[in-house]
Image (cartoon, rainbow, N blue to C red; front, side, top):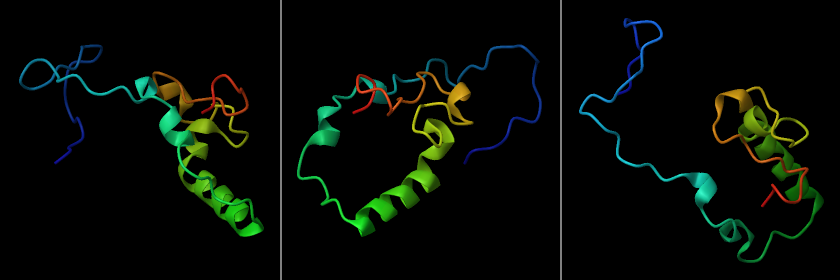
Length: 91
């Protein structure tokens, strides 16, 4: 289970309990064509409204209300979240 850190040495480096962490997959390195594969949902009023709901519930914290990658959680992420307003950065 995850537990909060309640004591320690300020400004010290956190190290894993048993030495090195296993290499974690970097989601930014994943081929983005996955997200473009398959048939997209039809553009209907219902799908657009549901998409907005999902974005506000799950995405806005990092990607921001405008989708520009400047949400309140963005400064804590490395790499930063995608800027969906930039065609080169978005899927």
